[in-house]
Length: 107
Image (cartoon, rainbow, N blue to C red; front, top):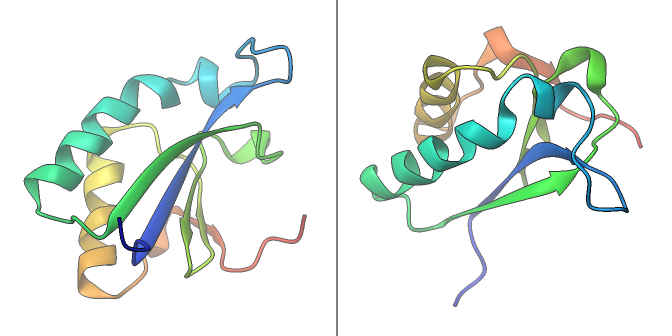
């Protein structure tokens, strides 16, 4: 597989023990992963890789989704409509401003 053009990370709130905890998980980020994956495939975005992550430490903004290499951090991604807006922006080469937390969150 070639390197993807974009890599989307979705906070699933997993901890080292493997147990999901935290706001993103409680607000349904994991249940939106399937919709996100299907939407990426339906749109023919074969250059996009999707991964779930451990806690991204942005709980007050959750559910959180990060798009690389753009380094766009999106918060409040709790619906199919939010995902659609973010994917629309990604396809257009723009930013889904209404969900943007920051373009460069420092760890």
